[in-house]
Image (tube, rainbow, N blue to C red; front, side, top):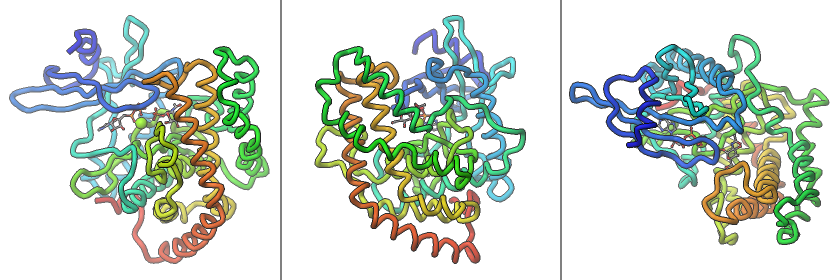
Length: 383
Ligand code: ADP
Ligand code: GN1
Ligand code: MG
């Protein structure tokens, strides 16, 4: 175990002595470690994370958000399911009660309780998991609809403001700092030919047809923890981007990550497509919660959201490839390009199936309205 990391962990209010610290998880932005401590023969496990402060410019403000959100969720869950409340995220404070620690080297660190007996998945293996993940994100939004204390900090401004993503892409393309544009003409043309996708939701927002809510904004499917035994959703994690946003962005990122049978960086594009049999339970799982608060226009655009966020993600990966891989962690030289290509294939597959998706969501909203009258929903329905 690196001495450096042990010194960091000792800045936090942990129980016992540090026994082990190991790299954990595979996110593209932060660095995650599993920490084990021991006292009198019993062990406790934690999660330690280095917050990427090039991406998140104000880690203390970010942790302010995370503390408010986690405390609210724990309080609400405790009202109906105390066992589940004990399995929600809790920020471990530093010894002087801050939400994170700035080390002498200038890095920012935070710790959470480790939620035991859970698993997260990069690729889902059943419609039941898809339903469960979507229900968890729907319940998450519903619980945060009455978050007290005013708006959350915007941890990354304009995070899903897709027209600005397109604008940033145009700028990096003009500069082409690594001379890579010539090699990705087909992908660039795809972005240019589908540019109109970018403004659909912000136009509706500007017309007052869809509201800004407290949203997660990174509803990648591996940001839900499932119980290892029951495979039921336990907890939504990765709260760095929880801030004001459009609900449909959360739907979109779920559809992007949950309906594709292949990994985000799959090189064999024949394996990449949108499996509509997984779209159905995603939409249903989300609708069972969102029926209580979605507007008619949000309902109408649920099926479109996946296309928007997947296209946005393609623009982000391709833009980062052109920029010289400055944002996302990469493990091989064309990693961002491979990722951009899977997203392009997925957008194509979504466009082809858009009509069927729309028909499915119409039925789902009808069913959700009916079961809202009789059914038990929410975080309390878990486990
Ligand atoms: P990133 O921003 O890098 O995606 P996450 O917060 O999502 O970081 O953590 C990465 C992975 O670590 C998750 O997908 C999950 O498997 C695991 N993980 C994170 N926090 C916890 C926790 N509190 N308890 C159990 N596992 C966790
Ligand atoms: C990043 O950190 P991680 O891996 O959960 C990114 C998301 C992207 C995702 C693509 C702050 O999420 O927006 O959708 O990669 N997070 C940030 O896999 O940019
Ligand atoms: Mg994550």
